[in-house]
Structure formats: C-alpha cells, structure tokens
Image 1 (cartoon, one colour):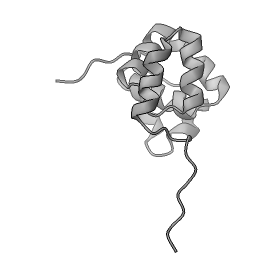
Image 2 (image 1 turned 90 degrees about the vertical axis):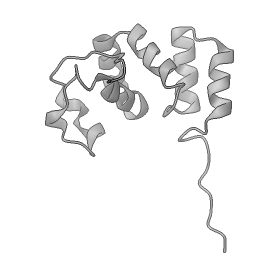
Image 3 (image 1 turned 30 degrees about the vertical axis):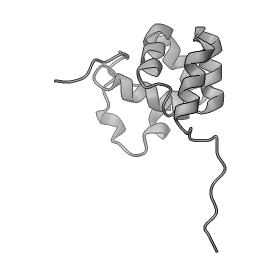
Image 4 (image 1 turned 60 degrees about the vertical axis):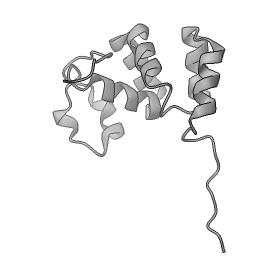
Length: 114
C-alpha cells in the first residue's frame, strides 16, 4: 500500500527545476505522483526562486506536513530554523530533530587518518 502523499504539484514541472533532478529522468516526473519527492529535493537544494514557486504551487500547509513527516531530514540546520520561523514550528520540536539527526551541511568533512 503506498504511503500518503502530502504535496500535490502540477503534473508538468517547470523546466527551471531540471538541474535539481540530475539523477532521474526529469521528463518522467509527475508533480501529482512524485510531489513529495520533488518538494523534498527543491527544499533541500533549490534556489530561492524554485522554493518560492514550490510554496505557491504546494502551499505552506502541505510543505510543513512533509517536513514534519520527515522530521526535518535532508534539511540543514539553517534551513530548518528558517522554516521553524516561517511556519511557527515549536522550537522544542526542531531542536529534537537537530539533536537526533546529523544534517547534511552542518559538519566539516572528516580527514582520513594518516
């Protein structure tokens, strides 16, 4: 049984999003079927313009539900704090996500042992 989708987008996505989907066939993405995947990728890696498009197309409620469902996974500390303020998320909730999960851009790379 497929899991519940949170984000519904237009079936045909703007070509300006293509650079964020280097690892899949962009032409085969469907905003209705793949909305959660598309939204997560744009929130993680998208430009400000693409994030503005996403907010207009999906709505803040759907995006907030997706981020909550994913417990902030994939978003940097700064990105999570931005959404916390924008959506009025409880600080304790976001602090819990950050304490549990290392976030992509928050740690410097480890050097190999010599």
